[in-house]
Each structure stands twice: as C-alpha cells, then as structure tokens.
Length: 299
Image (tube, rainbow, N blue to C red; front, side):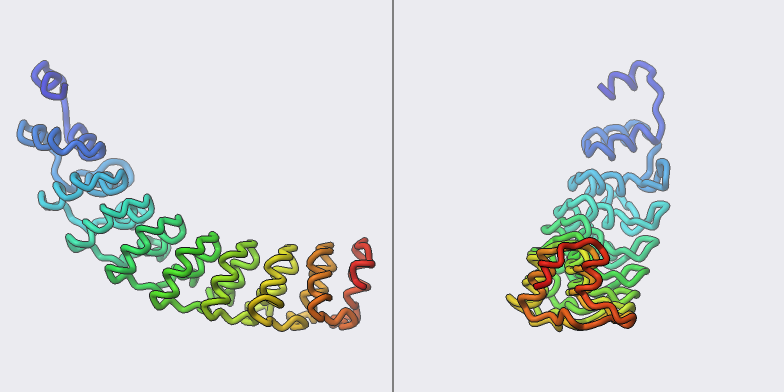
C-alpha cells in the first residue's frame, strides 16, 4: 500500500517513516528508507519523541534492534528526560528492556523527577520488568527526588511480590522517605495487609516513626484497618501498643477519635491502656464519648 501510494504521487516526509517505526513495521521502514524517506534515527515528533522511544513504548523489540543497529542514540531523552528504557519499563515490555540494556542503555538513568526505570516499573507493578532490572544490575536503593525508593513505592501501591523481590535483592526494608515514612508505614496507612505481613516477616521495624512521631500502628488505627492492627500487635510483630505521637496520642486514642470500634476492641484485647491520657488530659474513653462513639466498645 505504501509503495502504491508513493508511486502514485502521495507525498511523504520523515513522519511517514516515523509512523512505520511507531507501528513496529521493520520491513516497511526498510523499504521506505531505501526509496527516499528522509527520516533519520533522531527525527523527533511532538514532545521530543524519537523513533526508538516510540518503538520502545509500543513494545516493538525487532524495531528497537533495527533502530539501534541503524545508529539510534540509545540514551536520548524526550522532554521529561525519559529514555527509551524508562518508557519500556513503564509500559512493562520486558524483552525491550532487556534488548536496550544489552545494547548499552543506562540502566539507572532517571527522569526529571529522579525516577529510574526500576522505580517506574515498580510503581506500575510490572513484576517481570522489575526482576529483569534487578538481574541486570539496577541500583535498588536509588531514590526519587522526594526520597521515595523502589521498596517504598511498591509498598505504597500494594505490590507484595515486588516488595519481596526488592528486599531479597538487598533493598533497605526500613529506608524512609524525606518525611520519615517507611515502606511499612505507607503499606499500613493504605491498608495493604499482605504487604504489611511481608515487610514484618522481612525485618521491618514496626515502631519506626515518621517525623511527626506517627508510627505504623497509629496509621492502622487511624484508618480503621483492624486486620493490620492485629498483625502489628498480635500475630507477628509486637509493636508498642501504647507508644504516643508528639501530642501524646496513642493508637487507641486515634481509633476512638475516628470511631473505629473494631480497632478499639483489638487494641484493648491486646492490652492497650484505656486510662492513658494525652497531653491535654483526655483519655481514650473521653475521646470516644466526645466523638459520639458507643463507649461499650471500650470495656
């Protein structure tokens, strides 16, 4: 069809050939270039997208190899500093990721916010790509600009298998982001029970607090995550049940304030001190009553 259109006077330019690269049509691109298509390997579409970037984004391994052999700059970035490897990792194209690294792509080159290919593959839950990047030498503890590392983002998004893979490969299970939040804290806050249990099993510090002194158990209590509360205090970990944050609030105070009766019961059954007052002298019972909670839950 392209040959017929060209022979019958249909005009073309570098973007005609760019379309062939974007679609993964290697033979079409070969023919077009041999017959006058003006595209070179660094022709850019909107946003700085090169043929190699587009082929990588769409998972076209054969086209990726063709463009690399034709001289495409493998680490060239588009406007947000994303490389072909970064976009392949983002989209979950394992074979393209392996091809690019084999051809010399910078495995740790980050986008403009500091996210590496491993980080973005982790965030998107692309397990096969994560394993490939770990196998091929990606830096596991390299952080994004705000201090979030791959284990943190895996925990935040609830990707248990990836959490386990990263930590078993040497990632720091307790490494916090800039505000002090650890992978365990964020998994607890977001209600990812399987991730919480995995992190505890792999050695997470259950009492490590944020800069505000908020710890994982308090996050579970605040958000009403009964099963996670029980995991933290009873099943696996032995978190400090009466540990307070900076204003003297315990997990029981927070659960009572937010009306989470099941969590209140779990905490009391585990031995929480329901007579412990905060810095203003308020006990959990007072807080529960003040917020309209049935105080029978406190007994």
